[in-house]
Image (tube, rainbow, N blue to C red):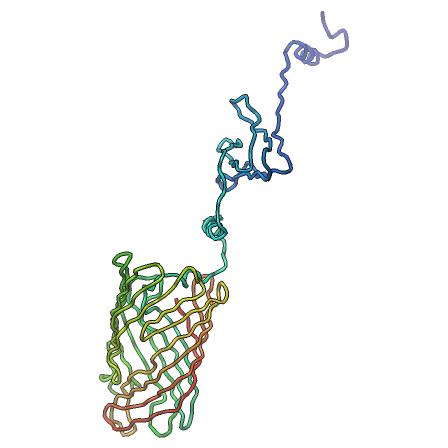
Length: 382
């Protein structure tokens, strides 16, 4: 029988025959029913990590589709953990209770940082690492500007300088630096208006074991006004310091520092450092001759107290064209406010009291004791 008699074209006749002769197949897809009390996560994880689905109420029924399983529903309890498998199925892992303290959770969050395009997102800088780390470096790289006001009978001093030691992230290396000192007064002694330091130094610091570490540095410098021969201004500052770490809270420090100055040649280095995780906001470095106490105020802000020996020895030309070596010494007690940048750079403003100020010369009997003063310093540590 031809269907064209009913007004159908040949193509329409073919489609009508195909509709009645080919059995139809009904595909039914049942989606899992997740109740409102279940916190769900997308099955497609852009990071490639398996993301847990947390159940917030006990005895919750969750439909779990399996391609080769006739079981579609599994009972879950509050302690069950749900994960996304590589086949985008919801897998139930029973009896996985979560028992974690707040401190462990914070540490886990800090460590589990999502990586985007190969870079970690910026986290707020924190002094926690600096407050609790072992004392393994006696000297570190720093740049500073120091101002001590004075004129007339007083002795003023302005310095733009740095040192020859390595930054905290380096174990060894060679550094060079140049320092400029601008002097004003005192009128009772003829001093040059400018002094200079040219230095080159090598430092190595490392750990011999978990209990022992060391820090040694050797340098050579020319300290002079460079108005005439600077031969007597050559000095060789150095240090050799060892550290013993009997526990996570204590470090014992012992060694020597060679200053090679006319007034003080060598100093012992000895003391103890305390940094207890039970008091993460407090750190005590009772180490002579560079003691320091740190008090953390915020994540990236801390207050500290320290003491230091100031001054040095320089080869200078006197008004009568003769050469001499001039030495200045003072003691400083400083309070500093320090900030931590995102790239782990430390910046501090220090204000201090200066006392026992003393001037002397190698070849002359002139000695001058100066009045107390104050000093303002800006320090950048790396």
